[in-house]
Length: 234
Ligand SMILES: Cc1cc2nc3c(=O)[nH]c(=O)nc-3n(C[C@H](O)[C@H](O)[C@H](O)COP(=O)(O)O)c2cc1C
Image 1 (cartoon, helix red, strand yellow):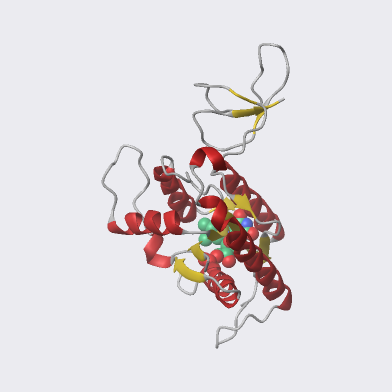
Image 2 (cartoon, rainbow, N blue to C red):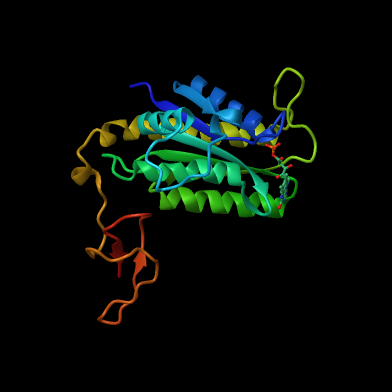
């Protein structure tokens, strides 16, 4: 099977570094055997997500259609005030529309995360936020996430990355996405019930905040993201 990897993110800034790094990651994924698609720039310039609106714009429908088909995902966000930019987070909010899919949200998919900032604090806190969102969406953040500080250009005029460490880390992460996508492909074709990981006791109808206190006094924590049936771990 040829895994399909969708890259999303970037920024609306002309010459966005995040867009360029995403392109690099997808190029590596393609060289590792994946089919790839880059959704960035104006393609992710979506109206603010509203759960009340049923009709989606063509761009939003495209995003959701491609994510539905994706075996692996790579997300890149600039650091805005120490976290994910609104532009990228808004696109991720649309993933809520995939909650009723056989593989809801990012279920069963490896997700590589990249953050770009002008300082390390922003790079690391943004990467952390991105990985938390991916976890909440039931994706599998790759072992390596890539925080990048880009005070000077990362690419030369021909589009080659000029910082060896960035090139190396993007290569490792993109290959992790393709490797996981290749292994998980068969798993994703199983019915949802067979795919689900169940740990501890599932409590019907409860909301899903972490750290729920059980009646017997034991502490619990939620291990999955949005779900009507939180899975609690003793
Ligand atoms: C609104 C805004 C907020 C920013 N906040 C931070 C920040 O908190 N920490 C940081 O290190 N860089 C911050 N930056 C710098 C960007 O993260 C950095 O320039 C990044 O490379 C921009 O990505 P882009 O080239 O893809 O647009 C901010 C930039 C903007 C425009």
